[in-house]
Each structure stands twice: as structure tokens, then as C-alpha cells.
Image (cartoon, rainbow over all chains, first blue to last red):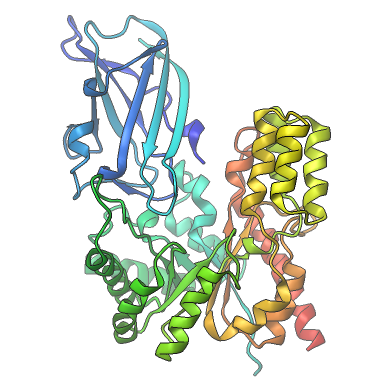
Length: 129
Length: 332
């Protein structure tokens, strides 16, 4: 319902020391019309320039500290509020080169009243300065 | 004075602008008040970022907001995360605890109607009735398409309410069950996704004739070798019944609030999809005096090609409500 808005424009950047970045990060919103407990976010699949990122290289932080996707499964006291940006960080040796990159994000959510998982996906070309 | 149908708005209607940070809660409430919609329906899990931890200061903020704009909170849309854990479903006791948590927050906010998701088991709700009675909140099971007022699952809630003789358990109709015509915004989106116009027209005509979905799906998927957009356009018919508007009157004792679902209003204030012109006369004739609460859900069908203007859509729906209510009252 909000697919085209999931990746926040202009939010892609490298992380780590300036001279030796060890990953990249971007801001993302939850593709749902309400907030959701983090334990129900089953997957945040990231692809960068066509290359899928391993699950264990992804960290999520809605503002209360970074979690791995496995740690999110039992984060029963934390939520991703409606319309709120969270930071998704990806371990990626050397970071991303300056210029444009194709970033894809797919969210798989466990919504109790739906018989199947809710899949929400966005893809944007963002620049690293 | 004769009881009258009232006009309200669910904050669900402004999800596009709120998601994008273009409207605040107060903007939504002020807008509703500006078009004479005095009832405000809320989704705490959407509208309260710290949910479920809501302190007294936040409760006071909501109450003051209503006083400031001359509105009232009409309905609380609950959710039940039965799948909160990956390894197992919530136990019955956990489900009841979650529903009780919502009933308590309803009571603190002074909301007397709670929308219950349609998938919640009637036997779980039966065990929640004592809490609903104590807190004076009506639990209305959302009658959402493809369910309808006389679906066997819905009748199980009616049976429980009758057997207990309670006024605190019943239904909450979503007007999506009265989809008389295939929504033009659905059709146009599927065409943009690759549906051939002639196949789209075929599906629209099949629905117009009320041909059962499975026949249409087979025609499109197999005989016409439909592409993925065409098959999706046909398959969505499984979720779009057209319930008989004349029967809603029989269920008036069971509902106190209505979610007035819509996808699009035309420039001349008509809903090209839902049979409000048949439903509202039944509500008026039956003396129903609850809120018709706008639930605009068209954003997701048009946001790929145009800017969404939820305010204008809701404004047009309310002009339609005013017209249809006045006509029906004139005929009473």
C-alpha cells in the first residue's frame, strides 16, 4: 500500500571511518497502515546493485539500538511505528563507491489476520556523495 | 426529535498524507470538523506512536483535541497479534489479555465502540464480554468483504450475543460488502500494470452481471490465457461480494457504528462502486442513529500516477451522505 515510499530518498550513505567505510546505511519506512511489533518483521531483504545482501549482514534500528534480524524475532517490547523512518545498516566492506546505486528493499511481515505473509517492496536509485 | 444517521471520519482515511508527514492528527481532526463530520474513529496502533504505552497525559491530549474541535471519539480499531511469536500462536489467555488491554484503553479514552478484526474467534470474544460490560465498550466484529452480514462466521457472533443477552458484543459493518460495481480505480490500475483493455472490460461486465468469481477467473486465466495483471484483476473478485442492502436493517440491533469504505468519489459526489444509495435509506428507515465513518482506501490504487488528495475525496463522500440522508429522511 506504500511500496513506492519504503526507501527514503536521499538517505543512502556509507558508515564507519571516513577513510575505511565498512558498510552502508539508509532510512526505511514500514509498508503498513499501522505500526508493528519488531518480532513480526520476518525479513528485510536488501539488494545492492543487483547483489542480494546476506541476512546476517543487516542491522535494524528504529531508535532504540541496532538489532540483527534474528534478534528482532524476540524483540517483543519494541515497535516500528506507522510512517516512522528506521535505519537499516548493511555490513559491506569498503562501503559503496561515489555515484549512483540501485537499492532494493523487500519487507516480509507476519500479519495475524492475513493467511499469508505481507510482502512489500521498493527499489530506488540513490546517490552516494 | 427523530434519530438521525451521523457523519464521521476514520483517521484511516488520511493514511497517505499522515504516512508522508503531510498531515498531523490535529490536521485530520480539524478537517473533519470543517466538513461537519463530528465523529472521529482512531487506530491507536497507527495514531499513537508509543502504543501500547499510553499515559494519562496522552489520553488528556486526545480528549482536549476533541473539545477544541467540537468532535467526539467514536470508535477504536483494535488489532490482535495472534502471530506475535514465530514459534506458536497466542494462547487463548494471551488473546483475551490483549483484547482486555484494548478495552481498558477504550474506556480511558472515553470511546464506546471497538472495532474487532473479523478473524477474532467468537468464543474468545464471549470470554471478553464481562470486561466489555464492565468498561462499557461495544465490541463490534468488523463485517468486512468477503464476509457479509449473513455469512456463517458472522452469525456465530450474533448467536453468542443473543445467547448472552449482552449489549456489548455485536457487529460493525464495513460498507465494502456492498460493492455493486467494479471499482474504476482498480480497473485502471490493472490496465497500467498490463491488463488489456478488452479483458478488463470483460471482467467489469462479468462483475456487473454478478457472475460468481470462479467462473470469471477460469475464463480469464485459462480460456483467455490472461497475463498476470489480468488474472489478478479477476482473482480480486473473490474478495468483492455484493451483499443485499435490504438485509442490513435486520441487523440494526447488533451494530452501532459503520465503516464507510470507499475507493473513489466522482466530481459530482457519487461513489461509482458502493451502493450507498440503497444502504442509507435502509438505515434511515430503521431509525439507526450511529456514525457513518469515512474510510477512504483509494490511495493505494492511484498513488503510482497521481498525487492523492484524501481530503477532497472525504469531502465529496460527505456531500453524498448529506444528500442521501436528507432524501431518505424526506421519504420517511
